[in-house]
Image (spheres, rainbow, N blue to C red):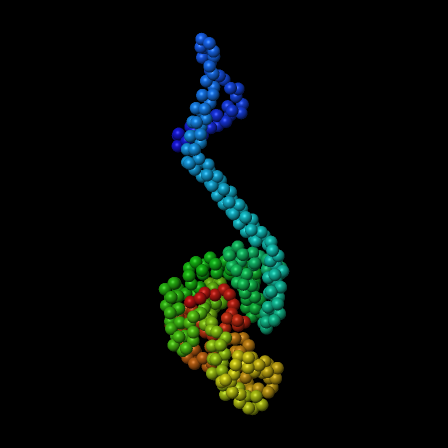
Amino acid sequence: MKFLLQILLLILTWFTSQVYATPVYTKVACTSYEHSFSNIESLKKESEVEIGVAHFARSGILENIYASKSTSMERYVSEYSGREEKIKELTGAGNWLPVFKNKLLSRVQNSVGFTLKHTDAEITQIIKKGKELGLTDDVIDDMLFISCRDAKPIASTDLVQQIDNYVNVVLKQGHPYKFTDIGQFNNFKNELKTGLKDIGVSTADVRIQGSSLRTPNANDVDLAAIISETDFDNLLKSFYNGKITKNNLTIDLSNMSNVQLKALSDDIIQNPSLYNRIAKDDFSYNYTKKIINTKPDKGVVEGLKNLKNSIQINYPNLNVENIAIQTQSGVFDLKPYIKL
């Protein structure tokens, strides 16, 4: 390295001397003439410089310096761009409010028992909190919607705190509120999934959702098994076949397609007086909401109520009031949730 630095210094010195210096010639007195060594010395120096430059080039110093500078510049640009994007995001760039508010208004206007509860400023604060903690837009959307439920409204300040609870408490500890510890949570998870499997319900997507993910003051733990549209329709056909009448005539559901089931549901809604109570109150609710509950239990899934009772006995601190079976597209498919 010392040699290379000397070479570099030599290069700089030589370059400076070539540009600025006046050549100096060494003269030797002879009997008949004066002989100049300038050409010889120059050739010698040029040879030394060429060798030094070659060594210097092979050393890779310039390349390393350039690469280091380039990497530093790229890192700076990347970090600066990331900070700039984050600042834009957190200051509301991109017109958050209209997008979120319009979606929220559409949902509450098309849902029974929901009313817009927040001002524009409050909605903005809720969105900002969610963004700061890395929540996706669909999670923020659902939490805004949940807070507008007439029966259980959530004030904006409380919702902001619940967002923080979900991210900084529940996700970090690995289980919802109401569980005593991670051990109880794991035991509960295994018992619930085994029980669902025993009664023929898919356990590919079993979730905890609701307030136990957001507040230590949650009243209960909400449970849901998410199944496919086809499996859901088959459960309804199996249970309600022979129980629905139109103009006192029993309807056979056993071979109905999904399209035919929807047509039946639509007709019940449009002409309720033609159908019996089970069709209007039970089947129509299950089909349109895409949910089967154990509260109140209608016996749609045999053994589901017994499973709920067993869970209540074994885990009284959770206050489990319902085990829902629903589809992913149902109106009760709401985030956030923890998949078991």
